Image (cartoon, rainbow, N blue to C red; front, side, top):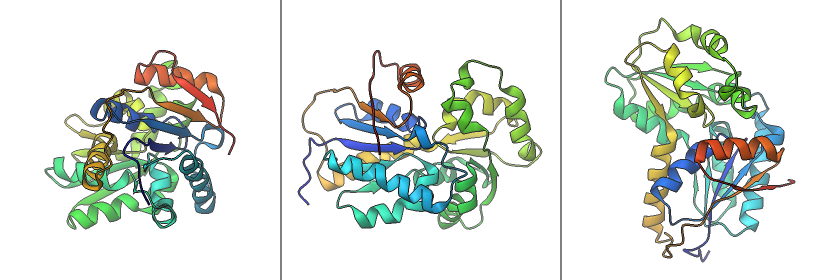
Length: 268
């Protein structure tokens, strides 16, 4: 496949969570064009079956493929856990996920090799982080915890409107007395809850988000394949949502600090 350097990078997520990856891309790769699809109408993916997540993820990837992207970033841990191999087998452009970068980042900063993984039911059930961390360091102890309440808090905008501390405390209670030094935010929605999560964890715990490390992978892959954008354009990202525009625009403006973001509705 002849990939154009100036083609956009596609980013997909179950909803607004992947905006955390877009934020890092805008900071570290400002010359790259970005097209984002958030499947808010069918979010959250965590409780859904593997078959559903694979189908929904493939639908988003096909839509972006038709738009002529040069790379796909799966900015959803649940989708990465179950659909990454299928996507890589289907498309000629590079496909990157968020789990391996997150596992790598946590392994680099954990001195005691005792790591908590916070994720959706689907991601935790897949044990994808445990496998990825084990491949890096077999002696690392991983404590997985599903947090099904977290994504709805972000998608609804409640995280910035109401007091969610009781929900956070109840959800994180099972790990409150464990001995660990690092916590992975194993869902790209969770960085929007960073301060709330930090408040409930033991002091001194390092919180790791996969977004920054994922963008390092994106930059490295662009360089290795020689497909980095060679035009300095600084174009605004284009966002598509399968759900309502109002809440998506509000969260995008709040998180990315973009005035009047270009948000469009998409039917898959």
